[in-house]
Length: 628
Ligand code: SF4
Ligand code: SF4
Image 1 (cartoon, helix red, strand yellow):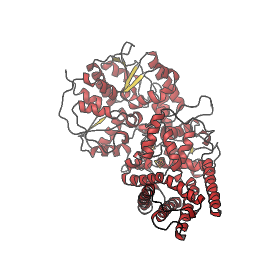
Image 2 (tube, helix red, strand yellow):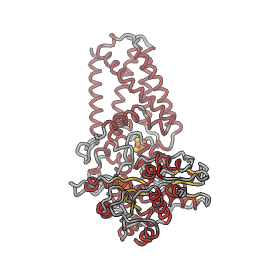
Image 3 (cartoon, helix red, strand yellow):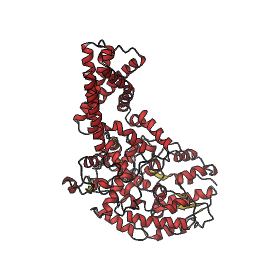
Image 4 (cartoon, protein in one colour):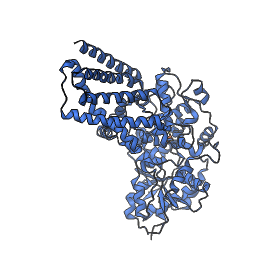
């Protein structure tokens, strides 16, 4: 009786502490702005099933460590019932215990052995090999590993070792109970809180694509972006408490892997530290490196503005943390809106974009006018099916002009009716991704108005950045949403039109395809470009980093214009690194589907002195094979 009472007190104290601590860690969640998402319930539940229960993401990127982690996780599930039974014996009185010869006892024993294998393997990796991505060794990891080993060892000893009711069996039972309750005291104070929050965070993740930049709250004049702790949304608070500190995001971050100081894991952990430190709701999140050092801010501006907004971190994160639109871009917006950025390059970029005709090159409108007057570019008049949106890349860059001409040829060859606008304004992608919301509003309103006034119902563009802005960003505008405009990337439209294209089979040296981040992770388009290359008889030598796990060309998030040139000539750059990955396939042609990727990879080919390597857009490649 006395033992049952003690057990009851221990259970209530442990569960109460756990609940109190979790409540403290999630304090502010209910009052935080934004809503947790319950739409597409089926897809969300399916994601939880594959990513959490089947551990698909965990295993995909790190097969060995992933399988070891999965063994521990699945073992925990198997142990849910065992733990209930274990406590029930305690409440009923240890003298009532009998040998467990049920099939479930044996099943749990097998899992206990597998969990031991998993946890010992993970501990060796953590404490012996110490991979850089995991960061400094922490006492918490050691304590949890020891508790899990203790739980499994005592279960095995109780199940098949000691006689039920014997002194040794009783001591063993008590040790198992203490280890079980100790977990409730340790978990909420460590990264292991992900055991409870991870499944919810995966469920509430926006989608499988890179998180978009949110619309500012219309009912809150003070909302200028993510500037202070009070601006963290409900999902942000869940994100910050769910991080496993696995460093998968850091491992795939092209900025970090080429020597940059940006580390997406540290962005999340710094915000978490600030949140848990009890920093006031008005405390600023980002600032200069000096402000971070002085404890007046948590994330350095320099780090934020190295981000390529490529989305690789989100794609790698096993617990559904949204780093990009929801944090990094929003933090940039907070800084820019409050006039707290110190980058001359950024200031130059904004000045250039503010000048008419609002492109980042500062090129005159005549550059585009000359293009449409020189080639077969009919003006869109509402009677045509497709509006070909050139975007800044195809309007002001010389290679972009070639891509635009190739696309025009292909549309004509497929018998499509199409036209371009007489004038275009930048869609605003660059302004929004670099945090200049005011400029984005100005540009996007002009661009939206020009398309709506032209009464276009179908828009196609060769630029995945424009494509993403027309969908993820413009969909936040009611008028645009109601217009129901279909927006496609040119590879999607050409894929539809390909049966109407007559293409000659031309012998071609080895070709690889670089997936643009905004097309693959931003839009989920990976099959169409490959089908097109196949239809043109071009076999693709694939890179290791491809499709949803592609690696950035180095241009995104404004880096084409604001990347820091202070790196020495021998230091790696993102575009050089991506070009090297392409060259590992032995290809002499790199097919691309974005004008920015073409610029960056062209530059890298020049740097590597590879004049024999061609960087071509898929539209150019197809147009060069048109017959008739
Ligand atoms: S979006 Fe890309 S560059 Fe930015 S933090 Fe994530 S992985 Fe790094
Ligand atoms: S943010 Fe995600 S991927 Fe990065 S360390 Fe945390 S859990 Fe791992």
